[in-house]
Image (tube, rainbow, N blue to C red):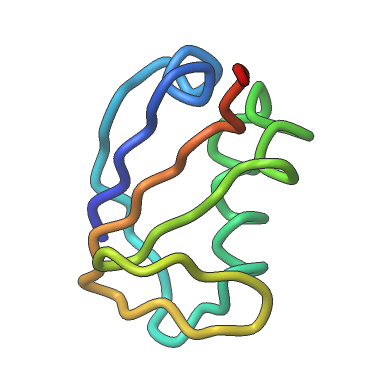
Length: 79
């Protein structure tokens, strides 16, 4: 799958995008764990991020297709 990182997540991951090989049928939670293992600097930041898979926000036990486009967006500040 192709993973795109934005803002602070790109800084923590050390890249703005990468191809990540994953087993078929990972849940969002499993994907988050996998990304934490790849980039320990993401750590707790992933817990407050929003993930989009193929343009739709996802969470929890939703399944992420192996060929998905994943976007990791940090929380936004402002008002």
